[in-house]
Length: 272
Image (cartoon, rainbow, N blue to C red):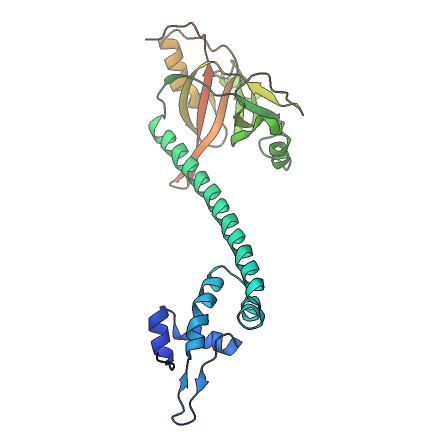
């Protein structure tokens, strides 16, 4: 078997840049030996065996000092222990990436809802929401509120929200009948979960589902399409409306927020 390899050969074989090989050489990780007869520096078979391990461990962001110790100062048992530890590191990274992926999927679904449901109406049963009202639109306690949700409720899709009462269609009364909140979907499907820290439930029932858009705060004009739909179908709102931040866009330097609305109605009401 060939036992002398030039840097170009090694670079091509492992698809690694010459600069990276020179850096590993400088760091004392994989160092080619100089041939005194021709002055060239060659990698040996031993270097070729070790280099794939170096590359793989480097891709795991393992510090070079630790890689160096592993390549030259560790026994088989010590190395298997290191490999096991790195396997756990990879598993944790995979879990983190899966969580990020699921978040991105949720964002994609939310933005598609904003596109498909703007000023359109569907009669659905809402999931069980848990929410906590805030005194101000945004404050430093918002993150703490997320932690206050009852852990036994298994919260999903936690979002900035607004609670609108039945007087919200009156511009003069909207401000005093609108409360900021944090809400989430409870995966515990029962209504008898114990709530703490002033958390409240938005119980499962028949609702109108729609999406509105608003600049800054929700205004009465943003609810016009909903109000027209209610009037046209002679529908009464039976309880507070839950508005949950869904998506946003910036158009011509104007920021527009999209909210999904869950509007409680009479469960026995027949709607054309």
